[in-house]
Length: 250
Ligand SMILES: [Zn+2]
Image (cartoon, rainbow, N blue to C red):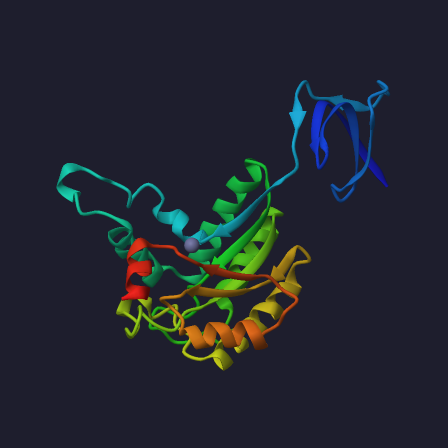
């Protein structure tokens, strides 16, 4: 059913700008037609331009809670860098509850929608409880992110992240205990729970995610790429940090 008509000075399409158009949308908010503006009645006029919704291809929603708190570079913190920022992030990651995860994500996704984002890929790695134990629903935290996206009305691709260790040849750090999944088999279980949670929202999809080349054994990255599901996105932090690249070749 036709719901509303909006006219714009111009809209951006695949083949460039199109001037002076009317967009008709249905009850679900989907565009059903784009026509030249013939000044019909019942059209809401916008004296401006419209562009398609943005895609946020890489989100760690819980980090929104420390935005602005860990990027202080005063004179006494000259050694601050990604790795000192990470300490603040771990402190938050160790303490965030499922309820807080959902609240933070709801706030963040609301901001995304307000600024024109219609899709978010959530690179999600806080899987376990505060003691590092699995929740009954292995994807409890992921389900909170889906729930937040549903509340807000943004599409989400949940990407549960496979992270095995603390760096090249290093055991996981205490601050990483909520992130760790030791084997491919356990990761595929986590992925399956996440996939199941996606059924709760028709705007939700699942993807495969590797934390980084420092977080997962190369042979397991290759194995998962070869034998894991092939019909969903595959996401990785690749070449994320200079130190990581240096470590990878030393
Ligand atoms: Zn990231």
